Structures are given as C-alpha cells and as structure tokens.
Image 1: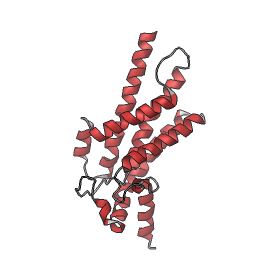
Image 2 (image 1 turned 45 degrees about the vertical axis):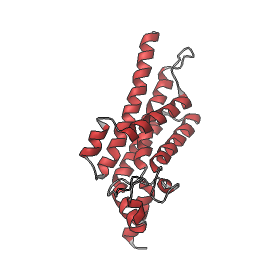
Image 3 (image 1 turned 60 degrees about the vertical axis):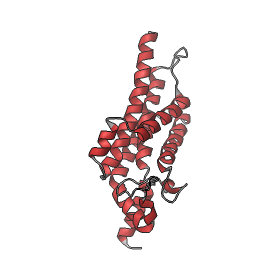
Image 4 (image 1 turned 90 degrees about the vertical axis):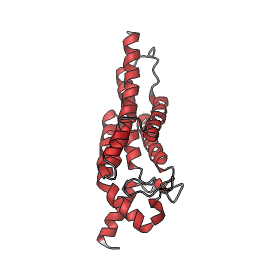
Length: 196
C-alpha cells in the first residue's frame, strides 16, 4: 500500500468514526445517527465511570480537529474505493459530506451532552427536578438529531455558506450541538431561578 493510500485509509477510518458510517448501508444511510449514538454510548460510559467534564470537553475538541483534518482525505479515499458512497440517500451526488462521514455527528453529540456534567456539578440537591444524568443525555441526543436533520437557521445558513468544505461539514453539527446544549442550559437556569 502506498503512503498516500495509508493516509487515506486512516482518514477514512477517522471520518467515518471507525467505519461506523457504513455499518447499515454501503451508501452510508443512517451514518449520522450511528455516529451520534456512538458519542452517546461514550458519554454514558464516561458518566457511569465518574469522568469529569474536562474529559468530555477534550473529546469534543479532539473530534472537531480530527474531523476537520480527515474529512476531505477520508471522503476521497472512500469515493475511490466505493464510488456508490458518493450518492446521498436522496439520490443526489455529493462531494463533501456523504452519509458515511459521521465524525461531525459524533462531535455534535459530544458538545450537546456537555451541560449534563455542569448540571450535576451545580445541582447536587435531591429536590432539584431537572432531568439529569443519563436521561438528560438521551434527551439531548434526540434534540441534537432533530436540530441536525431539520437544520433551522442559523444552522442551515452555516451549511449553505461553507458547503463542500471540511470546516463546513464540521461547523453545522457544531452549531446543532451547541444549540441543543444551550436549550438544555436555558431550561436548567430557568428552573434554578424559579426554584430559588
């Protein structure tokens, strides 16, 4: 295997979160949900093992950097090996974000779940009625996926503005993850302010 093929293969594995973007379909249909579910599984594991918010934040940042660096090469490698992967589930061809590239959804879910650790840290009292812990992570998964799929403004604007760039692939999911995190945080602060 040539050197550039090795880099392409490594980029493919990173951009598809260890190949998970193609687990259910050769074209990668459902790959984004699989990537977000993998992030949710990692978050649940970290939560159950008492890992701090710093670990989750580092994983969120690392997944962004890895995605930004590997999406273009990983996509090119995948399209050379499996040309049918360039077709979206809608039948359109794509040059930047096929369904199999799911490191962006992994990253977005890691961001969406960050406030759960802060809520546990700030609100340790039992009388606090906010959804916390694993149920909150599952709720944030659903909210993140809805925001990522429906793409309300400004998420849609980011995708349109930076279309077909590795940064654009990552930033729309960053925006969806941040929006989910902000919605959860706003609900927490509202309940905290009312409950005082």
